Image (cartoon, rainbow, N blue to C red; front, side):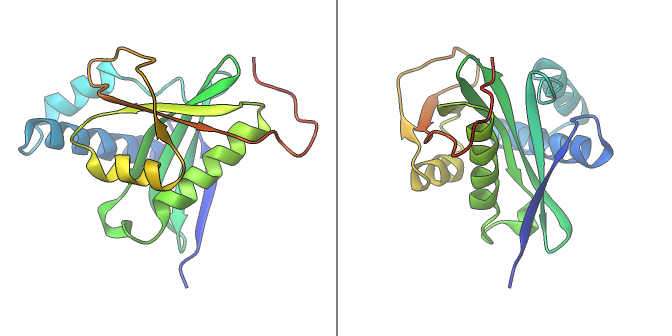
Length: 169
């Protein structure tokens, strides 16, 4: 039986930085349809930094599958809602429920922080990601951002937290 666990990390922690680099390398490969070049990955990391995926502006979760580092997902805090970013599962761990485990974990964090919804934007070529979001109750919405790679926008409404957690900003 596969066990998925998640833990908070800072984007500059060793494991987190490695996963974020792998994520960006895959984004570059898929965007250009060829192997990434080292400067392209470094430029993409500089163009779209992840340093805001740490308190007080957000969080980053690392996922482990049976104890092995397997993926990540981040949230950025917005007034009353959260933005999902950097959802990534290493290829060797795909198809084993990691995407669902990460979504459940970030949704729990967002609810606990008082967010009433999670939004995200993604690209047209990330068909697996779009299918994952749709399977887990995310619905396409009109554009809420204008990033250079944003082509599809999703949102999921979250139930109110069960306890008296203080809302984020």
